[in-house]
Every structure is written in structure tokens, then in C-alpha cells.
Length: 323
Image (cartoon, rainbow, N blue to C red; front, side, top):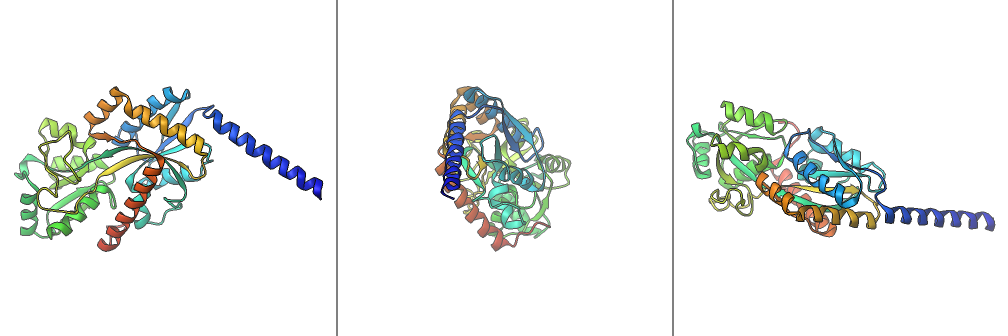
């Protein structure tokens, strides 16, 4: 019995040693980064820009795999159940890990099944209308909503998305009721706004910036804690008299829980180095995404606070996964 026990202990130590050596040598093969949205969107743009630079930093190809579906939870679940070896990562938005779990049943625990790596970017939610509506401020929009309670159509990129929550927070702060019109993504919502089927839209700035710069959309307010550097003349909702309306989106890189700390550290450095690159930094800022970076511990604390914040909003507003 002692011999068998000794053999098992030796085997366990050998395995632990092999795992440690593997973590030190990481990466030795390509690294997959899952994005839970189709190609071409803002998350995909940021992901491809940053992973291209990470490839150079890590000496191995870091590639994107798009797995859209169910408000980001399909991609999240895929990575949560992957081997914790650093070769399957998740570039998440705030929705999949801090909002969706409060609205629908998800097959993962967002705070226990992932290891934080780095907060990549923050993205301002901007409220826009078309010039035909004749509105230039949120106060004017609120006045219209008070004239026609529940009739002013407010489009979002989906139930429980940051744009939807921005609308819900504005409802409370302004004491009005908009007609929420959820879409499956920004593209169809934007198409209907331009076509006059809806009157106002909140969305990530990278989705809207080209139309804003072309003059086909009028930005009337930012659901953020400060003005966006790309739109310095557009005041926040709080500046216009509507406090507690901050609903910025953000993109963060996560790994499966129990990924070795040495692997997390290497990935964190690769992200920070990518965001510090002047060319990448400039491209992100011009697209409407604010580079962040920082430690895994800071991201973990931020995710926890966001999870608690949105859980409270979802409960208080009675938000469900169906209209």
C-alpha cells in the first residue's frame, strides 16, 4: 500500500511539474480568442486590432473565432468550459458577464468560471436622432416623451444591452416612459433609425461615429461619466440634468478559471503592450474606443461592481428576456 501511495504521489508531483513547465513555456501553439458577435462589429474590430499585436508580443498566432448568439452567452459558455491552459480566451462585452446573468438563465457563473486578464477598452453609449426629428438635446427629447408618454420609440441593440439600460436609467432620472424597441444588434437598429421607423437610438460610439461625422445622425447626449474625447461638444446625460445615467459598455479579455497565474501574467502584459502601441492606441481612439489596460485584479474588482450594479437595475426595472 505504501508503495502504491508513493507511486501516486510521485505521479502527481510529476504532473504538477509538467504543468508548471508548460505554463512557463506558454504559448507553444496558436491562441484562440472567442468573440460572441458576428464579424465586422465594434467588438470584432477591437479584437482583431489588439490580437494582431498580441501575436507579435507572444510569438504565436492569436486569432479570432466568432461565436455569436444569445446576447453573448454562447461564446461565454464555450470558453468557460474550455481547458484552463491559456489557449482559449474570451473577449467579452459587459453584457455577457454582468447583465445577461440577471435576465436569463446562463450555464456559467460569470464571477467564478472566468479568470480576469485585462480591461481592454471602454466604449461610450451615445444617444442619436436623425436631423428630421428636429431635436438637439436630451431635454428636448424628454419634453417630447412627456407630451406623448410611451409613444416615443427608443431603439437599442437588444434587451439587457447597455443601450437598453441607458434608456431605462434615463426613464427613471427624467420621469418619462419611452417605447423600448429592441433589435438583434446595432446594424438593423441603425437602419430603422435612418429609415424613420424609430425615433432615437442608443449604441456604442464606434457603431455611430461615421454617421455622426457625416451629419446623418445628431448626437444629443452621452450615457457616460464624462464627455467622450471624440465628441467633446456632446454633453453627458448628467450634465443635461439627468444624474445616475452612466451605462458605458466595455470589452475585457478573460480566460477559463484556474488558468495558471504565469499564463495570465503573460497575457496581461501582451494586452497592455498592445494598448500602449501608439498606432493601435490612435486607431482605437479614432474609432470611438478608449484604451484602458490594467491588472487582472483591477478587472476582477470592476466586473464584480458592474455585476452588482446591473443586477440591482434589472431587478428594480423588472427587465426580462422578452419584451
